[in-house]
Image (cartoon, rainbow, N blue to C red):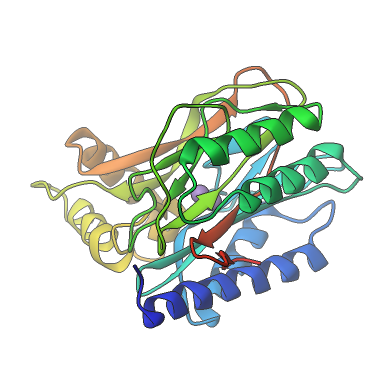
Length: 295
Ligand code: MN
Ligand code: MN
């Protein structure tokens, strides 16, 4: 169960995120720089009294997730691109996780992703099994005439935790975990023309604190301290580090930290079948009247 105060923090984080979504949708256009979008969104999270729960992901077309712009990234939005923006904010560790897809043209995959997400949300209630929610999502994807990304899932959320231990697949499964009052879940169907599967693709721009390890370089120790404390043990972008350390030293220090397993890395995830992907995601507090915090 959650206290009223905890529910309040989840809702406040959700409100910050949904306000930023509206702002992005009113401004994004062909030619927008991905780096500008990400940095402006991250600044607005702080201005809104929350903190980024992870770097803004802007994953385009067959890239499913974990792409965030690099330092000085010049890439822009192109006509017809499926631009998936996944953002997270937290207040005191209570996370709002939300994603949406934008395209310069009308796109059936985007429409389907929001319909499928709604079908999943409609299945959320105390007593529902994970398998019930997955089935609702999976049927909706099939009903729209599309396919899922078979190896990406929704998940439960915990305080300062992205994966609270429960995965919610977008394909049928036998997971009998029963949702409880006060569970918090993020549902995130990925929809493509035909079923796809993602795998790691380079380069890595997102990292997360894994464990304290002896580190030789001063920069390595600084990054590990930022990762554990300033970023709250949550994922961060390499570009966030250049406020503290020069890019060349960041690169070397990260190599050292990876070598000693002090950091976890998040490689870009790409659809190996090659198809374009649309994604939609909301965070939901399980209750008799489920609360979608990110609406
Ligand atoms: Mn997300
Ligand atoms: Mn998520």
